[in-house]
Length: 435
Image (cartoon, rainbow, N blue to C red; front, side):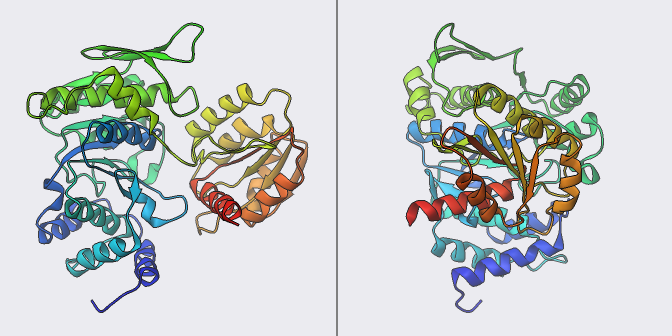
């Protein structure tokens, strides 16, 4: 491939989105084989589930980094820049390395079917981690698990967060169907930790784990976490040890579950490698220092204090329920302006039912992605749960500016409904702070 700029590279990558989603592994396997299987050059933790994948991956990688291991993290989607998806030791891949990785991957994309956006991005991450000589990579699935492009790895441990119905056209319409897809990341003899709570889902996961001879550890059964009375700390009752006085680094009560999964996974991989390297000592001090570096933007992220501005992707029903619960306990007497935009494949009415009753006014907006739900459709849905002031401002940045400029310092603004809305809002704040 001739010389190509970073912007030209991204344009080519984004154009691949038009090929949609292809649930098979042959294409990614062929690409990686031509690249000499870079994903086999480091140890891996594989993370799937409906919600909490990113924060769980962040916790695990932060602890591994603090232990002294060079650690890569692959997550999706990004909020502002493609580079966010691929990070090593907390630093996003640089523009030059994006181009190098793309050129390497594109050169071997010569199969019967050209790779999709996510397949190319995944191969780029695996390639970059190998070039950077990482010790560990924490890999988040994009969608599902069984046929997800990331599912060509052989992990040291697998993590399956919670389950709620999503992407039914690809993953099935029942929890049992969904568990089969997410459980597809379970590999022979590799231990699994999970927070799946539904009996039908757990039954399916147990069946898969048994077939693969993979030890399965369950949240609230094999490991758990509880808040210390009258303190802002937690005690983690692990699979092998108990860790006290843990400070939860990210806001929201739901993070206890994600934190538990991460700590349980770290217990397993540190124990499995103990004796091979003195860095594999999961001490309380290591846990706390590692967690103190955990950051996960765009999820219950406080952007401003006056007015209070909270940014949260809240991109599905479960996430909207979590956000609604958090806001109900956080707002007090503050009047809330809700800035909301949702994608067209989400249960928008159910999501809105969790959020708009808390609002004093609602501003409906629309992310630039072509999957965004039309504002008129959202307006009709909002009216089913809300009788107050409704404004439509289709440009996300203008919607956010209006919300803040027309709120008093004692009010609150929440921007939610889609990670793409969160990303456009985050970009506005970043630019404003720079200026």
